[in-house]
Image (tube, rainbow, N blue to C red; front, side, top):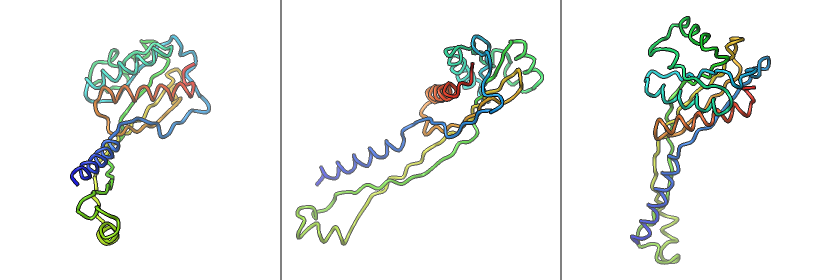
Length: 207
């Protein structure tokens, strides 16, 4: 009977791990019908901007995003290389971006952190009632069902990604993503940037 108990526990534990698997997906996107792309962005400077108070998170995320932009044909420049820490003055930022000759900016900003609780039920095979179907399990199964519930809480981070044309000062493309149970900041940022780059490339945002 201990073997049956252990097997049931392993099944429940597997379900628990499956519920905690991480993943990033975009749940919505939008493209400006009047300005669907940043023209002549190939070979031009595009600013990578991640809105984060923690400078280390911001630096790592902007480096990752800038590298992805460069890989796709533009010259990705992290915004922290143009602006000192804590600069929120719009005029100073505008002057720095214009001086760099940037044609566009990609902004990423966390907008929500949600928690969702789910309950997974797995049967536990216990007691001497399993020896035979007749004279054992039949009466027990219909008369005394028992189940063990596994409660899991998923952390979901919602991030908006915006692409602006600096020449026209207009929003070109936007998307909203959800990441479930990110384990580390570095891997979270990497997955997020990769997913965003794929979506932007699919929409042909940079021409």
